[in-house]
Image (cartoon, rainbow, N blue to C red):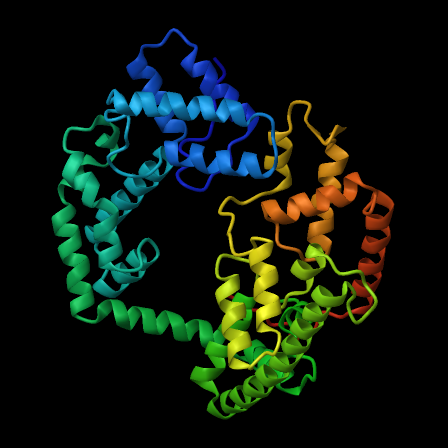
Length: 422
């Protein structure tokens, strides 16, 4: 029976047909039921199976029957009590267990070294954010692992856990940890001040900085780097920081006006079937243009915005969202690898076979149009490809146009070429 490298899917993993076949092979093997239960539970739990069943139904995959059979067998094993011995008492994967054993061994070495307390504290912070994080990481190890051979490589450190935790806690109570954090933080600030000043100054001067993704792309940075620049200026340059706050407030007002216009245009599209630029309105256009991240908080965020801005189209928008079940979040992430694995045997939709090229086009179209990848958007694009509305040629032309626009844009860096060094 072929082995697999994954361990436990937990609550959010996407199960492929290869994985389903692997579990079925375990069930049909000559192993005892107890051994089967251990292998099955270490690979995938019941909650993940039921979540995947919902996804398979959504994607209209014929293999959903196999998932239903696996769910039935898992419930049977659970009823018989076979999963009790299979469950991981430490509530983490084998890789995580190995990492935690390595980290507690390092902690033991640090605490028993000849370095002064401040150096020890700095080294500890490279492993754990706080004494509480350290405690939580090993509570179950301490409770259940006394005679567990799997923990033998860190037995000495684990036996001294209480001493290690008490010393870590002492560093916090004496403010040694906070002092080290302060020094490390300001070292980063001073090292990156010139670049942070450049970024925030450009934000203040730019007329388009309210378009956040475009602004960050022009600078060639991500949101994390921008936030670090803000923190740096806040600590080291009060006058510039106050100017930044004024600009941020002005940008928010601009963004609110822009978003309100987009929502009004979408509402008009719902009513008339056409958007202001002449595009035919449909569900995909709604998802593409709605100015808020399409995630589990999407409806709440949109509702709050429309209420605060007294939108006249609140009822139209919310009715459309509810009728299209956009308020039903799909928890499982999708990517082309997983989808290709789902379709690793011949699959048809409406009598048309799904090919590797179809899957490539779907995900490339989603990517270049900055559309969130969910089961709903996947199905919308798939339908347009199957009926010929989206083709390889049309996606290629759009890609070339985006590359041309990118060549015309510029990535800005300060004169001394200094970049973030965190």
